[in-house]
Length: 506
Image (cartoon, rainbow, N blue to C red; front, side):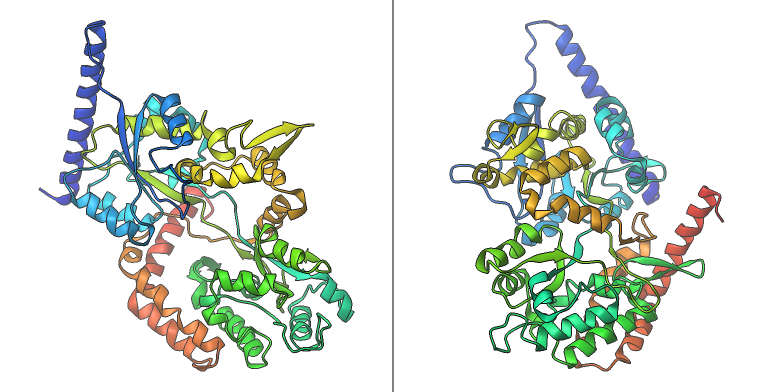
């Protein structure tokens, strides 16, 4: 029997067992008070997202999991594999004889692999029966990305925000040097040079950084956007999709960063910078311009202003390049995937649980309990920050089915401090995105080659710091295509052609 037929047989048997179980429970309920109802246990494997619990609490003992159990009447039992070996643990679980009801993963390639192996259940029938809030609130575009041969194999959790990076600068430094906010890439170069060389903090010392990046060229997206490209996304060129990291415009963007490094305007230690280094250098007053995450105004930028009362930060326009291009990468529509292994005992309870998180439970899990974490005062949401921070762990449950709610999100972000402009930052990013034109499920060649192809991009940092010459980019492109990129590109464009045929735009 072929692998495809075996997969279909396994799925059919699992659904048959589900139907028989449902009928059996119905008969037990019909027998009246003498029937003993089975405890409604549901076992789930999720990621802790780096969140921690207050003393005396854990993933199965805290007010929020108790709330979920009470409201759903499901005995939810949570397993948290260590984040650093999360995917390895998921593979071990799938190979074991004891399968949970739900597994949450952030890797679409992992989902694709186990669907192909016939190890995951299709969920259409269960969604139609138990998942009305999920079907109502999750857009069709997201469902389309988790369909295989017309059937849904995962319940998606959506990204909270559309993008991450935008440019911020010290206005007090601009004013001290007689400079206006930069707009063009040439303007940005002059501000970066001045911030590095012209003593913007006025202390008479050579102790400031023109531009701050992090390891692997982190926080470089707006500058690459000035050349019309972003790393890791697919762009349309001449009616076909091409991988942004391989385009000539990427070579130009790297050359611009290499110039900054060569002239001493780029932080010389950027290849070693992790997020903690970034925070320390901004808070310590060494940096006056960088690509901030939308939430940095409540983090390192706020710390900078607390440490230096004269510090004033403003959001900037994205740098506009020589061809008039600008923008930044967008986040993937889908953040995570909820799947049910073939052989799980209670797949229907998985959908019931996720339906609650997407519907009636969404507000409490997103915001925290009203009256404890937040209150409404004069029509505004007011957050109790110590309580909010104490119970951040609730996010690991809420993230199972995150569905953006613009009104709720604005209230929540404003309650964290309107001075941080968190909602405004998100909106500014959303209006300046360079879209990824490929949004299908991972192609077969991606599963086999994409990890290696991403590793090849390590040459970008070597080019910027001058270890490798600019021509090393051309060698990278040739190697990228030779080691699987050509096959991936063919598959991506086959998908793209099919999409245009569906849309009637071919």
